[in-house]
Image (cartoon, rainbow over all chains, first blue to last red; front, top):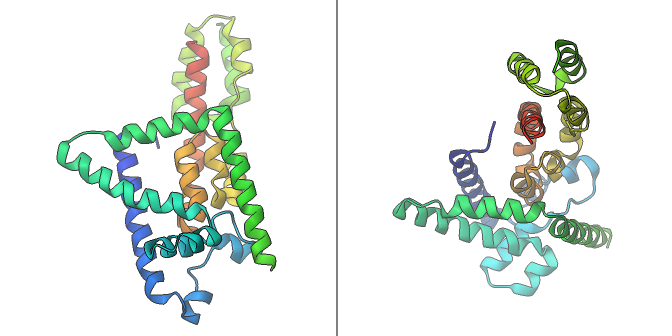
Length: 141
Length: 113
């Protein structure tokens, strides 16, 4: 399946809808044992018993929604990227819908080109590994 | 390119492309220069079965998508742990088709470079 402009908008819409539903669910169920041990947990952790690089990002985004900046970083710094995307993408999508432009699609394509460049890719991989190592350290405590 | 070289290329790399594209690829090879044969051998085609295995083990980290050059979707999978496993599961069904598509694009790029 070639990722055309339509596919990218559909994919991002699905991600945003799923992401916000996920956040709403966790906002009302964050301290319930059923939610903590239920089926909706990190699949990587369920299989390997170790956290993935983005474990804790849901808590981080929930902290950010309450403007708890430090708690969000301690949960997972990737939460900042996710929160930025979850606020920015729907806004840009609405802008595109009203003005009939392709701003989001162009941003997506540009981001892909930038991320594929060797220097950027190396930095991003390094940051991901560091964050994963920190996650593993926090989990071991 | 002569028929023998074209047939040899398809026999070696046919599994990397969609079945219905093989006649078109064969035709494109016949119309190409002989010099392209060596260049095509150097083209980095990904084995769809290997990609399926990578998707199975590393799909929740987006490794399969990163290897195909889909950095946007790869990053999305990494940040969401394979879309809570759902996206990783869907990609198990999509990754082989996407690999063949990427291979065909690489083939065209090498042929018409």
